[in-house]
Length: 445
Image 1: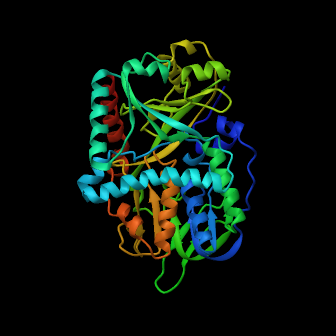
Image 2: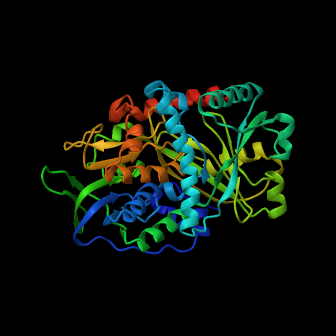
């Protein structure tokens, strides 16, 4: 069994890396370059924006510090689902009902866009429709159904409710007390998706650079923005920062005002050895992705080669907890006792970024690098909070629209207010660890 706990090692040991076709290596930026748009970060958001900008006739360069898709984009749980990481009530409390309804609809549009891009660019990424949201107790099932009823009243959402006695037809597990099925959501192989988007971007004329960390960014008045790497320089009319959790880690001086608004959270996944098609289908007959409603949740899904992929532990301390693989195997067997003794083939992890309120943080920086500018040339996308597989693609389209002068949809998100994590650089991680310990206790009780 292989275990990794750093983003840099992704390309060598995760099940995604083991099962994806080899990556096409991209050059290191060397020398001077002039483009219309420079994008910092070669993950789902950056590549999606690059595709849409190229379709608008813009000359685009993507600068990735490591390999394309090396961060959360290429090693996440693979679940593409509706909504945001935060409850839509969080958005409604800030922006009102109309804006919340618009953002909710856009989260559904994100799924349509994802499927359309897969089809348009013929990306073989193991797309499988279907998603189950399940509650682990009768009390949580009642709360979940109340929440769904509220979504139906305010946003017209419609999902099929599953009572406890209906669950065996959908999942062979004693753990759940009720839930719902969403046929529009689904799951896929995220690293194959990233590499497919990169290939499509290259065909569209986007300039892709790997191992080209941006070390400096200047936004001088009356002149193009200037970006500096170890071996090259780029001038651009507009810039997109799409590095998410890796931006602060790999380029701490690039946009220091953004770093306090997100926190890196370690997430971890295992896969079983192949179970065989019949045994795998018996666990989840519809082959849907599954997620429970706990704050510290479990999520899992079948893979195209008939394994079970399972995630369910997080670390808020930036350290990988000891015995993580064994812990995840224990959680997997609590869901599916019939898998006791099945070996784990791969275990991996890395960081995602979360915002304080779990809402996505989109916006612009002013000339001094401060977020919240009503206008500006430097855009940013961050704070997907573990819920970005579909939303990153939409975010890329929204920022491309905004750069072209149509900022209506982008600014709906940009109006969301975000506070820095409390405690400053020294104390915010310990404070978050204590807070999450409380939520874990609440889930257990």
